[in-house]
Image (cartoon, rainbow, N blue to C red; front, side, top):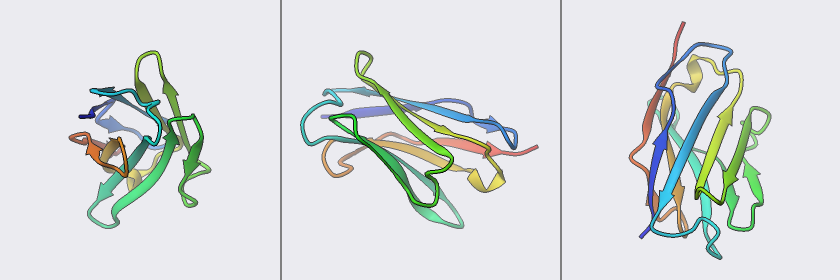
Length: 116
């Protein structure tokens, strides 16, 4: 089925913009009923849903992160991306992209460390 892979920088400095891209294979992200999401995991907070874009292109964001988060997609490349502005050490986490129905498929995750 759907397979996903995250890509982006592993190390960031505070105040910078984090940009991650999820490359999807096996099915189209525009398949009816699908949702493409970003979730992160840290020791202190556990799993935290950040936001999503539906197959129709509608975006949704976590209330706590919406001011700093932007999710976009490129349907021609079957990719979707995460942008998180003004990062701090609290944003250090493993970032996952998910796809399919009800978070059925997950990427392997990518470690992002914010440090000066």
